[in-house]
Image (tube, rainbow, N blue to C red; front, side):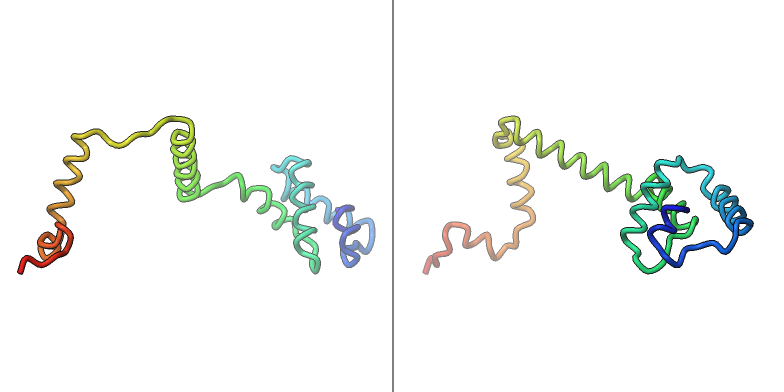
Length: 129
């Protein structure tokens, strides 16, 4: 609380009884958070918000926000790691063309999906007339 009162001039307590009560409330709300983590997040909140001092709830949320990730966040991180692993593999290993049997399957697949009008011009687009 001293850190916050140093950062915000409007954050002052009237008397010692009120200060003790406020400290007890803040301690109760932030009891699950390690002191060093709470100080780091308080410092970050003070840097971002120059108008109002952070509340104990804002500090608590800032401390727990990064610890709790949604399923989507976890999947996004896993996808990013897979992409990085694939990029690293391609940078460190020689990657050649696919084997012939794979090329044959791809050609068959592409030939099935082609529009018939374009098959007539596959030899260069010249008319036979």
